[in-house]
Image 1 (spheres, one colour):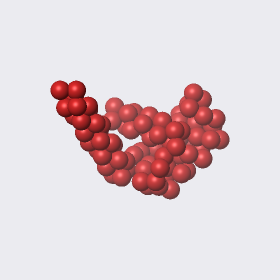
Image 2 (cartoon, helix red, strand yellow; image 1 turned 180 degrees about the vertical axis):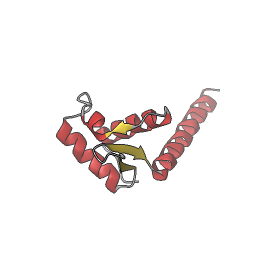
Image 3 (cartoon, one colour; image 1 turned 120 degrees about the horizontal axis):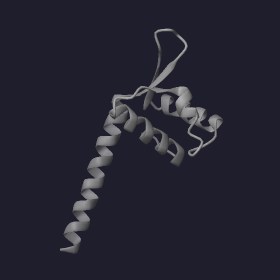
Image 4 (cartoon, helix red, strand yellow; image 1 turned 30 degrees about the horizontal axis):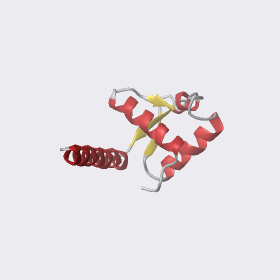
Length: 97
């Protein structure tokens, strides 16, 4: 995975959390996350995440709604991130002992 910037990390985290909670996210919902960045910046980052293969877009049955979903590559990213965190926690715990 290419290096993600802070906005991309926050976006992919938000998408993954919502997806794991069983929610279907619309592109329009993500563009409303003003606390992360402007809609134009968010749109640019969503396009970049799609290009990197971390998200995909699926058009709803009526053709008007576009849903965002994570990919297997995203799941591997979070699995690797979790392993790194566990390793860091274990390393810190054994260093203190």
